[in-house]
Amino acid sequence: MKPGNSLMKHYLQFKDLRAEEYAYLFDRTRIIKTRFKNYEKYQPLADRTLAMIFEKASTRTRVSFEAGMYQMGGSVVHLTTGDSQLGRAEPVEDSARVISRMVDLVMIRTYEQTKIERFAAHSRVPVINGLTNEFHPCQILADIFTFIEHRGSIQGKTVAWVGDGNNMANTWLQAADILGFTLHVSTPSGFELDPALAGVADPTCLKVFKSPFAACEGAHLVTTDVWTSMGYEAENEARMKAFADWCVDTQMMSLAQKDALFMHCLPAHRGEEVAAEVIDGPQSVVWDEAENRLHVQKALMEYLLLGRIG
Ligand code: CP
Ligand code: NVA
Image (cartoon, rainbow, N blue to C red; front, side, top):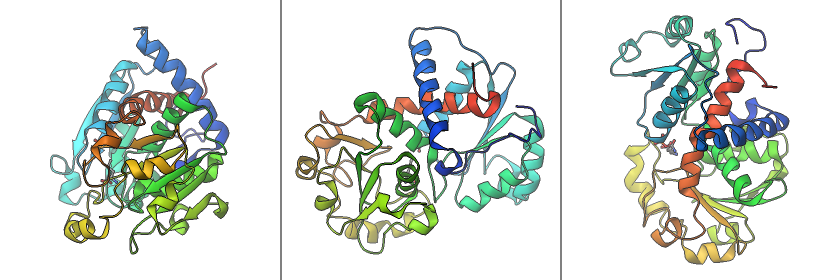
């Protein structure tokens, strides 16, 4: 997509795309994944460059975007706060103007959502959210693709979120609203999610439970995340105490549907937010979930740069 094209889209939140765009992306992901598994070369992004800006640590996001871009024929530039002028107070707006004149696509992992929004507002090229304090849309894209691969459509299903009302929880809530499933949420008090932040159109997609056991009842998918997200390390000790009863264990899983899946965006802490028997057990699909970051993001980059194929 040429700079300045009025059809240019950013992917800053899950709600930036519509249900029918997700249906298209999941179809494309299936095709791109199958080709890749068959060792078929597919390089529609030859000569295109992705800038990846990391202001927080990453394993999966870095590897999946970098490998994905190379596999599609493009290249990447990796920047961190410490090794660029971003760490020396160059305004975000100036960085956006400069970087987006040199590359075709930008992925950013940072703290406040407002920072990525300011960058996008001054960017000539699409910007992708690689995680902020508020949202992690690429992860939920992979999670829902993984659910569909294992169980078919997520529409009408129930997803149980156990733990912190964090960036993952906010993004699950946006996804529930857009894709038509129900989100059961149980968090310790003081760590609730804020539906106003997610900005959902249909509040009935959210059901809040005091007890994590009650939240898991009847769920088709149980999912959780670290108790302390990046940027909140100072609260770690207090969180360890507050979250002690929000560990997804076999008893919680037994209340969900018999064939319920377990997901975790990773990295995980066995014995804290999830018991080892659950994450390493037969209902867990966490490795598929991690792998699918690669495939969904290749479909996303193709869509943002080239629009619909065929
Ligand atoms: N799930 C996820 O985004 O992992 P990383 O922090 O390793 O990128
Ligand atoms: N909620 C976690 C997700 C890590 C991928 C964090 O923001 O640190």
